[in-house]
Length: 399
Image 1 (tube, one colour):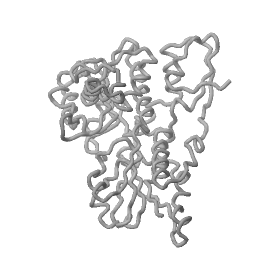
Image 2 (cartoon, rainbow, N blue to C red):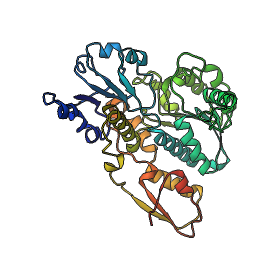
Image 3 (cartoon, rainbow, N blue to C red):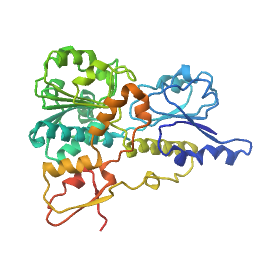
């Protein structure tokens, strides 16, 4: 069995090396092979003999890519979104498809928190006094709301699709859909919050499109003192409208991890951002590796073989694996803890200095290792009297 995988999938060799020989075990003439590829330049000729194709979001999987392949049985995307996948075509071909919803949700939430910490220090903001508007209540929006709750920061969520399902579930008394007890608000109410954080997929058509969700009209209604963070899909904000707003002298503070037209970037917009990065909010080692793990589990299920490996088998120790806290929790301590694990200014500096030297995709491919809060174990002394670090996602001591 030939398994083709995006070269930027961490631990792919560790998870899939044995699986590529699965057919060899059952058929002595079959040859197993694990083949890496560059996601942006993958061609139909390259994957003509693939049995399994594992991609990330930069690879368009459609008839154009797969028309030479007659044996593909499994396509996996180690990412949350599926706008790069022609699902109808795969269904027509009876090719099994699996994605990795929620794999990097914690990573993106911690990116947002790091950005807020940096801006709070830069502009002397009291985080606890801010209200955060979350656009999108899925995996990522949910993880962010949990961390905000741990910090006592008020938030509001807008997600008309989930709100609609919630209402339908209550009407039908469907326990599956009625378990969502959250209160949703309108987009206008979220856009009035002190911080606006975007966490929706790119949807062009349908009842609730998100393409250019933030446009010339509603961007102009934002206040001078607001913060706008986008770490979902670049097309959710009209970048040219945002540039025009900033060039007019508007004081909106902008954090952009995603860009309209990636891998191309609206160069003129970069100087008007507080933080600018190369679509790496979800690029923690754990975030990317969970995608590999979830696809490994799905392929094992399709092959009807037992799952042998878990992510914890491969993750290395953090550079600072454990710390002890002997004081009460404060914003100063929060800032220290967050930046100790991940300081988003590192990635902002890399982006500004290297984007036009290396290129957008190269920055993503060569992204330096970044860990999540969970990689660090925090022991709280009796004097600390706060479990906020653990509620934020830092690991507890086993003692």
